Length: 354
Image (cartoon, rainbow, N blue to C red; front, side):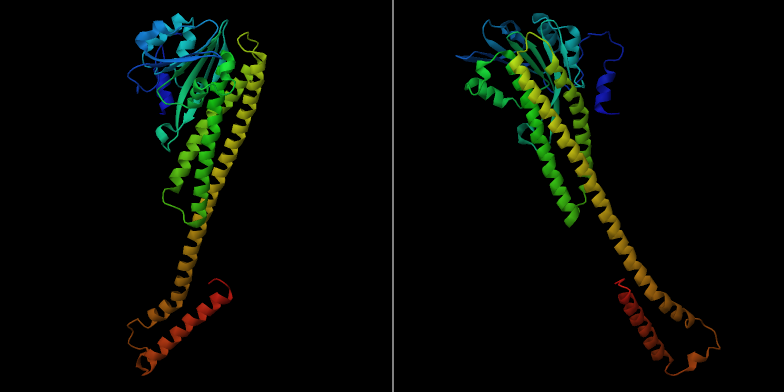
């Protein structure tokens, strides 16, 4: 049974809206990044769960509350009470096997999706769920653990790069989505490089772990496909939302985000096709090598059949075999067997079997 199935079992039989964290408990405490900015100034503070009273909206400024860790269910419940987030939304935030989706309430927009990255410079690609809530002047993001792809957003906020500091909270909401989706391009590029290496290995000298590597990539791409198709629908739904919290100019960027999602899906499907072609090429190469081995063994067996037949006849211990008394019988027979050997080799070469 897969990990996702185990997560779902934890929620069987509980009432709707019951807050249960279904992920892996890898975070012992809650860490919070608290950004407050406008076009003129920016402040950032780092808090923990006990500082929940300091997390507030600020009139005339944009506030980004970035929460690392979901294991403290009581704290998540307090965040819901403080910012009037429905318990069903909090339940979705804690249910880390959630499909990407977007929901609109009266005074906020909720979106959940998967973020992929290579934390700490590792080559291994990891996936985690990210939930975003957009309210008037406020964005709250929930992550399973520390480490994300938002460093470029932090830099733009702190150094006042680009349009971010000049825009409202809806543009920050879009920027976070855009960063997550753009990172998919980098991940797919990594997979493309891996497939290029495996394709070279197949053509030159297949390694013993080639099939295992192909299978790992197949599983990763299938998981990505499972996440990307509902993400496409969620972005499309977000574009069509008629919400006062989403400016019309921001919707133009959301439309561009939808196009990026379609491009990612096309690239992913192309990689899945390439994966299938590499596997077929590998199996064809294995089959061809096996055929060559069988061909060689068959030729060797064919050469030795008449020689074995002759040796078998004169290896019989009958008393009355006239050839046994022939003085030159042994060398003549050896010469005859050599002629058979040479003749068969010449015949095989003429037929281009050798």
